Amino acid sequence: MAISHVWSDGTGNGAWTSGKVNECLYSYFRKIAEQFQCEGIWWDTVCIPQQDRILRSKALNVMQANYEYARITLVHDCFLRKLSWADPGTACFAIIMSPWFSRGWTALELAKSRKVKIIFKDSIKDLDEVILKKVEDGNIAAKAINNLRKLITGIEELLATLGPRHTSLSSKIRPTSQDFWRGSKYRRIYRTLSNEIYIKVY
Image (cartoon, rainbow, N blue to C red; front, side, top):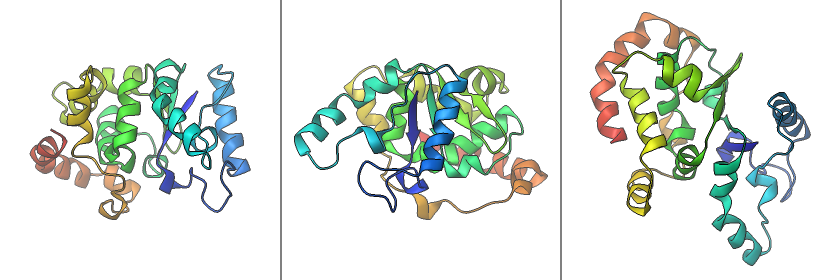
């Protein structure tokens, strides 16, 4: 199982020394790996050497292969983890607005992964089978996710994908409540922002 995450969410080293992580978080990931019959975990926080620059460079050069050949890629994003599962459309919108979707590295990880599981507050959902395949036709957020998963076949597509993305967009993500996503406010904002989202993603 490969873990796709944003370091600033607390899944990086944080207060721990290089190569060490929160024991509770590790146990949490291990239980999920066992749930999906995965025999090991690839987590860049502990798997990429931090002190030896040569070894670090080698690890970074082959990092995407870990996502490409993993049984599953587990997406951990603190924004999504606070959101209870509602429906595929809401999930797609939340995904493209999440810090995780805005990063260049995680975009590439998403594109390379064969099977992706996303952690929500109350469940773990399969991106392709439960979310993308069941969303209503014409959903712009779903189209953005699908395009990212299917269109990176060469260096040109990779550069086009990474170009508009940033290392950190945390200052642009505003906290929200469950009522926002479940209520009529979400539907109104979704309709009015559809064109803007399309422009930003493409």
